[in-house]
Image 1 (tube, rainbow, N blue to C red):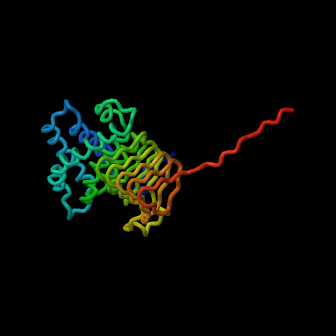
Image 2: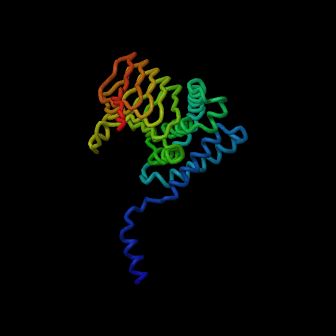
Image 3: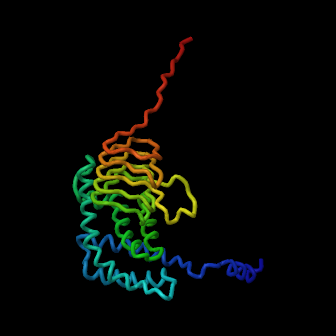
Length: 263
C-alpha cells in the first residue's frame, strides 16, 4: 500500500473547500442553546444571549462564503425577533395541551412532546431563513428531524396555535402554507406533486386554511391544492385537489370477510 499516493488521491477528490462539518456541530449547539434560553427556568437569559451572539458569529464565519456579505450583522435583527417567537411558541404549547387528552400539564408539553420541539426549532430557524442566512436554518431543522422524526422545511409558513400530535414521519415542504389552529397527526405529508429542479421558485406545496385537522398518514400534494377552513381530513387520505371549507374527507377501506369452510 502506497500511503502517500492514497493521501494525494483523497486530497485530489476533496473538491469542496467550504464543506466544514464543524458547521453542522456548531449549528446543533446553537440550536440547543436557543431552546434552553427561551424555555429553561434555570438558564440565565442575559448570559446566554451573549453566548448565542458568539455562537452566531462563528456560524456566520463558517456558513457565509460570500466575502461581500457580512452575515454577522444579522444577529442584531434576529435577537429582536426572539420575544415574538417565544410568544408564538407558547401558543403552540397551549394548543397541544388543549387538543391532546393525553397531555397532563404544560410542562409536559415543553419537556416531552416531539411535535412541540420540532415546531420550536422550525420557528427559530424560519426567521433566519427569511433573512437568507445560508445553510444554518436547514441544519437547525435537520437537528430537530434527527431527534423527533418530524421534517419541517424552514421555508414553510405556519400560523398561530399549531399542534402536531405524535409526529413521527410528518413532512412539511418548503412552500407549504399552514394557517391558524391547525392540528396534524403522525405520518402526514404536505408535499409536491412531483420533483424537478426548475420548480425551485414556484409554490409546489399545499395551503391549509384555519381550523383544519389532518389525521394520520394523510398525503396532500401540490402548490395549488387548498384545504378549506374547518375541514377534517381523515387518515390515509390521498389528495391532489382542493377541498372546500367545512369538508370531511375520508378513506373508506374495502372490507371482505373471510369464510372458513369446515371440512
